[in-house]
Image 1 (cartoon, helix red, strand yellow):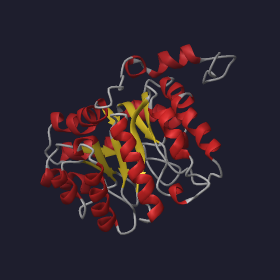
Image 2: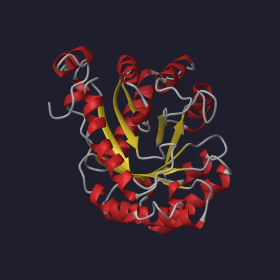
Image 3: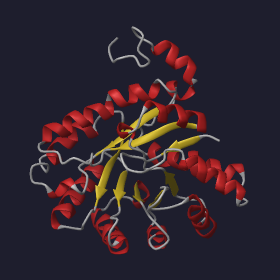
Length: 290
């Protein structure tokens, strides 16, 4: 089983997670820029974070045979903080970089005017840079927030095939399906979706334009739930080709629209080979530049 996790926050995870993910079949991932849990107080803290997503984290992932790409954006929660909104002016500098395969996470947290402004600005940047957009649907009033998100997406003029609305559920999937946008589902231990619920959605709506992710971060989450979903699909009667479409070919097709998706090199290496080459002065992970 080969797995491409299209939404996971590896900045929050350990090297043990990378090792376990590789053993489970993960060979590629996309890490969206998001809220780190502690409020940031200036645009400079975002630049350090974005630089790490483009530099250190792909290097760290490569030590474990996983190809790492990222999305860059001002997340909806911090779009409400006037100390952070100047980040919108910095985004073009990052959206031009090769490792960036989409604009995101963007969208709504509590559906404020400030969030809507940042959302519209970043959709316009996605059009300007010919990049896909990763849209976060709110955890409160998800149905209303999803409907409003689709309205803003239509107003932006972006091709719906370049947009994925993430964190969907049984209530919101039909409207997004009918919009022509991609449908993203986060599989979580306690909230969002479970593997069995995901299988039920796949039975009803099919496997086209569907992305399944772990969205694993600093909270209670599990980076191996993509694998668990694939196993649940097989147990429910889906075949290996269906699983490969959902867990590999669909995310590959969506992010390949950026023209920047490269899965050579790290994704073809075994962990033991990479780690042996990566040792430096007794450290298990080589430091950048050594």
